[in-house]
Image 1 (spheres, rainbow, N blue to C red):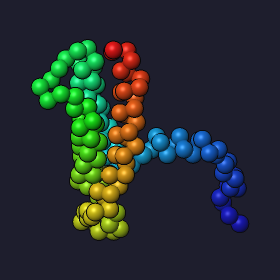
Image 2 (cartoon, rainbow, N blue to C red):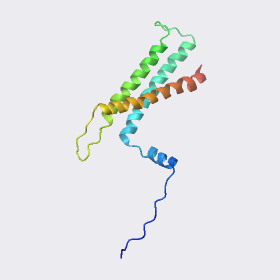
Image 3 (cartoon, one colour):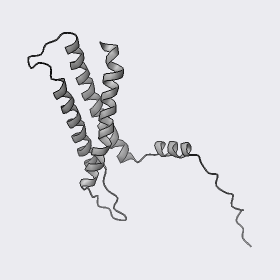
Image 4 (cartoon, rainbow, N blue to C red):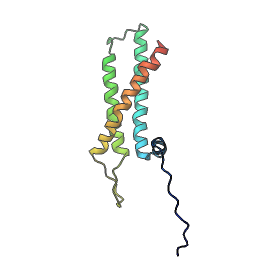
Length: 134
């Protein structure tokens, strides 16, 4: 003789509902790491876009056309900053302890998260925004 009310079955959620909830409740350190890579990528892509548009409008810098070098520097900087910031911001789980641990895996997470961010921001800048500026 239990005084508890009967247990109702939990309604199952669709795939989209599950992913939307995961998106809304992402862990803060991961959000910070992704946003740091995104901010660096947007700033550097804006600088590259300004350089590219200036070259298209006839500016001749003393070093010549260095767009390929600029893209290489953009990618390298976004990947390095993404790795370092993620290493500093995303500690590994420690279980019941209070110490924070960081290893190369945290940096690897940042590196692999920064790769698509760098690519997508550069593609958006050069293929979507640039035609409006030239």
